[in-house]
Image (cartoon, rainbow, N blue to C red; front, side, top):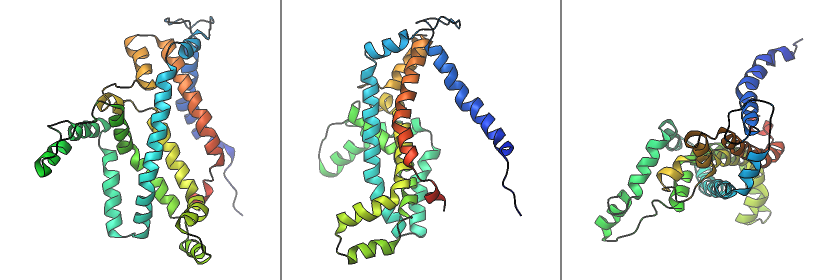
Length: 279
């Protein structure tokens, strides 16, 4: 007769999570309640920093970050779904090579990849504009240093984080279910909506959560490709901590991002059935 491990075996993991995850959040929350522009660790706590975060223009960078994360999540999902279906249906050596090529950029510095994209999008001297001019004599402008360029960079950087969980989700769709739906007269859209999407939902939700959370904290894309055309909330937090040396304000902005992320992510996690992915 086998016995399941007792709670004591989970204690090291619990201690590790408490030390490396919970404690930093507690420290940041404590700093956020300090008087503005001070490093006073006393008991004179205040919500003034949160009032400033709401009333002095920080809502706009937060909204831009949320909008950018949402567009990136939707954009990567639209690209990743057909890619995942093709890779799954044509599984083999070719699909493996393509998967490796898609995953390979993850092991390269994000800044290096973004500067490469910067060179690609450059007007006149850029690879895209130069190739079109050389091949077709067609001159185009550049989206570099715009919000659109930042979005393109975010989709490019975060696509693998959507694709691979979605590929796992697509693998959960039995082919006989699709054939049965078609035999019953369902068209392509009905089959997708009623059969494929619900069955692949766990993988899609995991990919969406990864992409959204990572995109919400993205700063390099806006700096390198967007040219600071739009200030994102992470840039505002960096400015408060590093340049203004206003740690309480930076901590308050950080806590606002954590709270907003939790409000969005936790309800999705509550509906996520991880058992289906591990069976």
